[in-house]
Length: 65
Image (tube, rainbow, N blue to C red; front, top):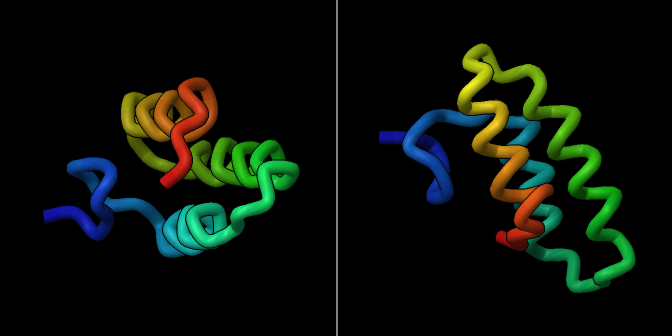
């Protein structure tokens, strides 16, 4: 079981924290900042496929948690 509800793999705590902030921030002007931070933190995932999955979901598709 993963530590998040978005993917079937574990995410680093720092990435989970920024996703939670993104979810709670209702200001649409901050969306780009959160997406950039998520993209940056996703680069630390060991599996390149998981990295691409996170970036695809939150940045390219612009899904808000």
